[in-house]
Image (cartoon, rainbow, N blue to C red; front, side):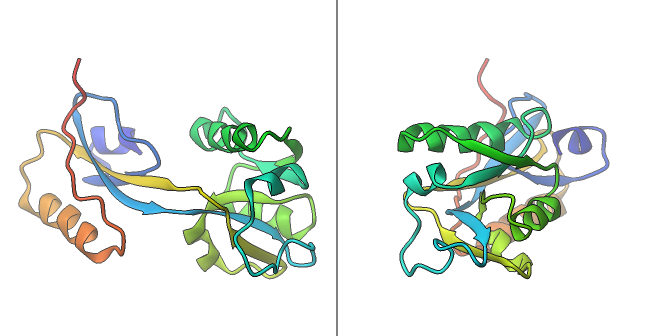
Length: 173
């Protein structure tokens, strides 16, 4: 997404990592928990409490390939490590819809931001994953003086239920 901002295709972008490019400014925008997406028939799918991290060792996982989404891939493996479990890979997919289709088909469970529950895939249930959180960031050109861009990012922050209001300019060198 940062490339699209830099080349002018986008005025502002939402992404999972802050930009390290000095030409871009970054604002943490929205913190949200991660959720464990499971086939609806799975025994863990409808328990009333959040899923413990150790659940990641009880099911095969549908992962993003590292080359297409290194942050998401590494984040899930780090959660497995934190839980003291060895991940079993059930499948890999490059899009949210494919991940959900593979989960519905029983290839395993997936860890994704809780907001993906809104996609409501038949055959998939989601449970919050205990003690997890991920942040989405707004990114725009650091030299952008367009008042609409700045009003837009401020409006997005005001409209979210869990905003992170601190701006971060380009990273220190």
